[in-house]
Amino acid sequence: MFDKDFDSRLATWAKFRETLETTKDPIQDTIDFFNPAPLVNIQTDPYTPSSWPDPWELIKENTYCSFVKILAICYTLQLTEVLSVEDFEIHITHDNKKSSTYYLLYVGDRVVGFKENTHVSKKDIPNSLISHHEFSMPRLN
Image (tube, rainbow, N blue to C red):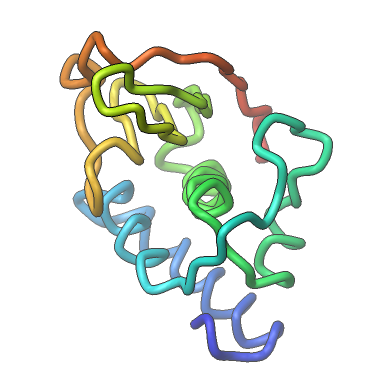
């Protein structure tokens, strides 16, 4: 998808979102969909929600850093009916043991971004991981 022109990316993304309505694990499928996105160091300021691209700008810009990839997964899942009742939050966290920063997406009781290429239960997040900023994501549909 990421090497296509904007209209083709938009159509591919819309078609993919339709598949999420009936899949067994829409969160994992969405992680897998965005895994091939080429990464840059910084695309947008994660601390300033007003600077974040909206879903369609994100697909148009087609430039992903680790934060924008989490944002893309969030928007994609928010635009489904199957997950429309879930609460979505983005957390900027720091792991005191590893001295690492994580951008996490909380979808109900699931967390994306802690373990590479998958999602985990909230209860699997270690106590050493401290959220410094939490952003409740407004509903999109």
